[in-house]
Image (cartoon, rainbow, N blue to C red; front, side, top):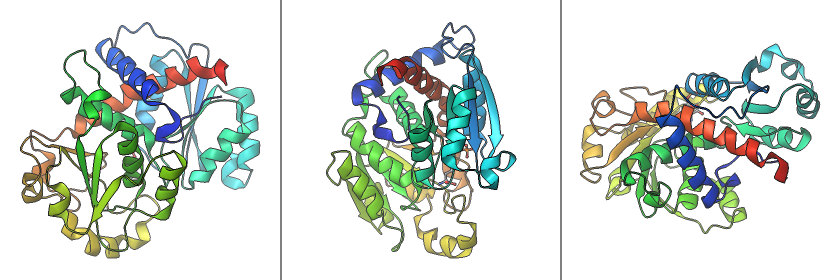
Length: 316
Ligand code: CP
Ligand code: NVA
């Protein structure tokens, strides 16, 4: 059984195929013939809020011929203490796939280990792989020549990640950069350096420590092809809001900081954004900001991910 819990759950060759399929699905939207989820129901179990992930998966499952079933964790017995393992076993008797947004990363691993259906990580405190694949696809739309190899177009490019350099997006971009052959420089306050957990995962997946971390935001964005940021207060960290804003304000992506990257650098943000905090409104509105393409592409890329998981199902 194949799952998508972290970036490296697909090989580079498989990622290239996911991108090619996503590009085809995007071009053919409205007259797609791919109905690989026909007669299937995929459950979304969400313990946190979501706009993009929830809607893109619900629409995506529907467009692949399936039925999406949204389950707020608190509406099912999982929220009242039924075990993750029993939940996985029971849901495996009813539905054909699970799309899970939760806090502890171990929860998606346990669901995958206990059930008999594919599990997709729709964000944990540790990783957000659906977002990273979509981001890479969105960059490659600009960098790959028409019909060219999208995956190959990422190699050697530099991403600068600013702000909360210990969050799920930072971790996922560290692993994603290793997988795509990109350079990554991260800049955030002391105390928010990328942690031992991501270092251990890199090692486990066969990569050398690939990232550069600095407290100097201008050093990080030098020669960057992409300037990327995320909220300073991730879901679950609300109690630290005041302290985080104070510490992270030197890492806001202002027009000055963005201008210090390459002249044709792209600005990206997974959204939701907090203009005036991690990014200025002027940067969000810059013609080189591709934030809404990123958001749209969640749909196309996740459809391709689901299609790949389903076609792999028999080769466990
Ligand atoms: N980027 C992202 O995952 O957004 P949502 O929280 O709206 O799903
Ligand atoms: N780091 C953010 C990402 C939101 C898509 C969070 O976890 O809240």
